[in-house]
Length: 321
Image (cartoon, rainbow, N blue to C red; front, side, top):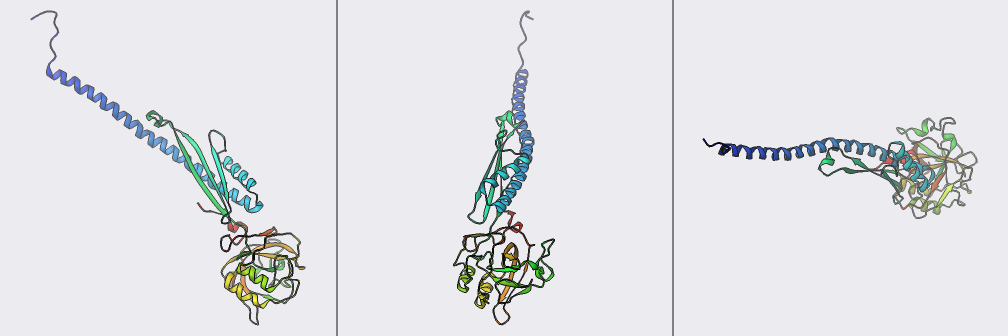
């Protein structure tokens, strides 16, 4: 035996060393894959929770903005309201990289869209080169204003049809199951709770052909009715020829209808559902009130036929996306 020399490694020892090195490489690769999967699960779940929070805030902000626009018809104010509500729900525009973009479109009523975008800081996923994700969501609410095409009906009702305290329609005038036949007493203004009269929204003497054009959509009147403004007929006319157009154009629709006091002065409005109309000897419009009386201004405008919601108020506020 020769002294001072190391024994030569056996082929089996050399193979074992190579296998150990391969295991280390495979383990390192597997560890990276495991970290990536854990990152996707944990960081992905956290990002999903953030998106749900953003979505709730976007929906609430869109509804708030649409409601503000509905009440005030002011786009700048509605945008500010939407951003305020988004901030109250955890997502403040301009803070920590958060953006709250608000857009208002009036192509079909008033549509308020709120986009919220914010950075999500990752924990595990950052190890594999994904330190952050951008999480974005959108909420859209639709509201509207009446039009004179098939919108605000060109007839008026008496404030006596509503309860003095609650504003709710009195018994027979708000019964969906048994619509009421509202008649005309050949006067300038309604003379009883179940009476009606025609109107052109206070723009002058009520002419049968003019009101027919309003019903058909051939004449659009742009006006905001002022509280206490006289909007009666001025001529005590029956306007028998108007019942057929109401039956043809407005049956089955919900309309904002002006409500007047005993002198024909505008007091507010209510949503009225037209069932049918008849212009024979017993001239009447059959229908019922779907909403309580609201002592608020009523704006009629130049929306094209059928493109605008036909009522103003809580009935026309809803999420659309």
